[in-house]
Length: 121
Image (cartoon, rainbow, N blue to C red; front, side, top):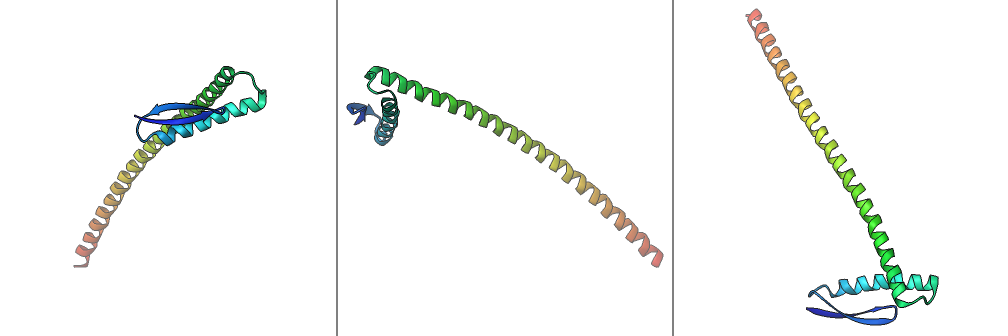
């Protein structure tokens, strides 16, 4: 198991993570530190715990909003897939009907050509 040191609100924390996840953990800590610093700039020194709790709530709020957007996008994808499937089905029916009509027309033309050939002789 790998270990990294991250800095949040000027304090260093040693943390364990899976091998290869070090940069990801550092990035997450840096992003979380951004929330803490934003709150600290807005409200001043209001206590480490309170800053951490408020930052966590901000992160969860964003996560909730992203989840809602994701559900909306998933719904759109389902609608688009259904519309695509319906269009493909309709296209297949149209193609089948067109092939049938052209085949019938070709048969009629061949029959007409045969009758014309018989009349010529």
